[in-house]
Length: 416
Image (tube, rainbow, N blue to C red; front, side, top):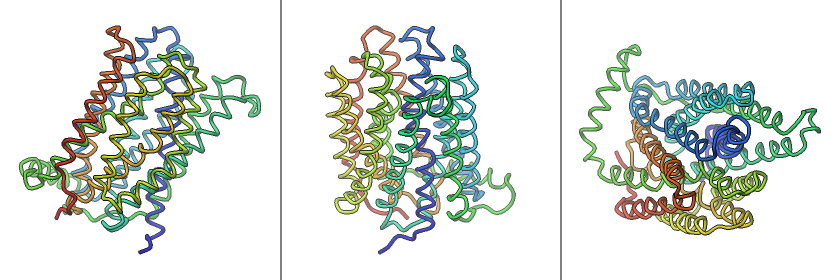
């Protein structure tokens, strides 16, 4: 059966839009520029620590707010309005990084924190809209399409930004530092522009509560409390959330701290940027392939395969000695990163009641972001103890092993 083109494509284009932040800012330029420009006067361990603190703070805010925000969005029928607000927050904060001058690392961290909140909060409501653009039979393929377009769009802008960095004089810029500041502004524009189709084409599910925002808020609190009390009705969902919390900790930490890890091993910044570009372009076809794999094998088996590959990545990273190995790791991560995210989203969409999608995706994002509270702090904290970056990377293996063990208990049937 053919997928309905307009709503699906408009929904997936949001991944194309906000993945520019994930690729060029979160994984790419911000960690390097923070260390070498804004926080050049700080010790390497101190800058790693503060970067980890900000990543964890953003995650903690989402942990505390995501379930209630999701429940309120279901009650009031305003998923798209929440998505618009978080998109605006993230894009404006990212664009404002252009204005931060050298040495003002606290200001850079505060704007980065706002950008992370916009990115993470927006994903809550973007994910929740999946159940309204297609049927359950197509969740795997549509979810994978979003991640695939995200890798392609984020990769294309990141490639342009690398050219901007390497040849700033072609664009009338004074030096690479000015080029990076313009790259942040470009991400903000890209994020805003390509978000527009979703707001024009993707339908808003009807509100579950009647009345004004106060009635919706009361209904949200009541339903959220009821959901906590009756989670036993959704036992497979509980097992999945525990498993997801464990293995996505490793995934998110790899995404957010990989460049910082490479810098700590004294790899050149240009090698790290090229490795990230490899991940983006390998991730595009790989995410599409995982969507088909999930449709054929089932999403749970696809996730298990991705976890196994991540374990290989961690062991390889522990022994890594050269930039060429970093390229190989980047390609290997690109093969599974989009797949594990896409199939996790589609498996979860199968397990939740469709009429409560934003509320339950609030739990989903809460668990994912709670995991990201632990991972970056773990990496940054171990770095401060003097154990070195290699000592911190091995701890992630335990999370993947435990996540796979719990995931094995999860069936793949539909909730009602």
